[in-house]
Length: 231
Image 1 (spheres, rainbow, N blue to C red):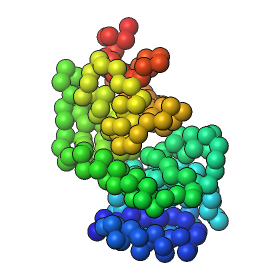
Image 2: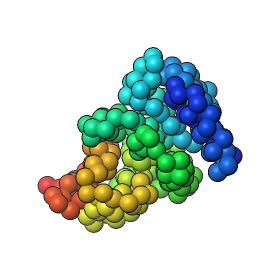
Image 3: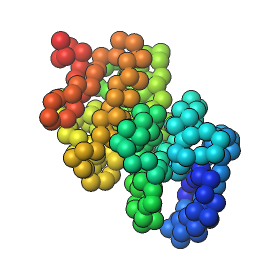
Image 4: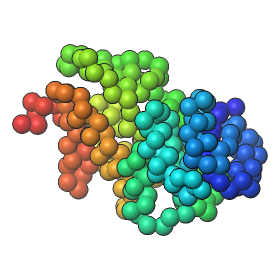
């Protein structure tokens, strides 16, 4: 069974989900505070973390920011917050996706499976990037290496970067990236891909002299271009 961690102070919900997810091949571990959740992530090796925003000791955004200091595990936010700004804040902190409460258990299982499939598609190999000496993608560790530097990415960030590298010079639409990377249908006002691309850009900027950049093509999507082509 695949290990999943839930960090939520609703004990009854956690118990219900443990039984339901077990029927679908997932072993659910539970933590009911942010601090206990962070400890569990440090100790465990979970495929996916389900993280509630409203926790008794610290909010989910703080938990998310803290865990991204040491882990790139896939995180699915569980939130009762209705405002788009709240969901955007979670994505900016490093969440991979979110499910609004109350949620359908079938939808939750579908989202978890989508995250697991994304992990499985990233095989345990390192891919050198043609035409760029010293640049490679380690699909197992979700690490970008360039010369002497390494950059750890979340599953979604890495999958986005790989999709862009697989189609150099081609504009990939938000709908295409949502379908391929998030593995779910695109909705016109869904800004998830935009937030992930924004975080990915900032991380790539830390790789000094990296000869690639992600360009926004207005009303179309995103394209990966070389430094030479961007001037």
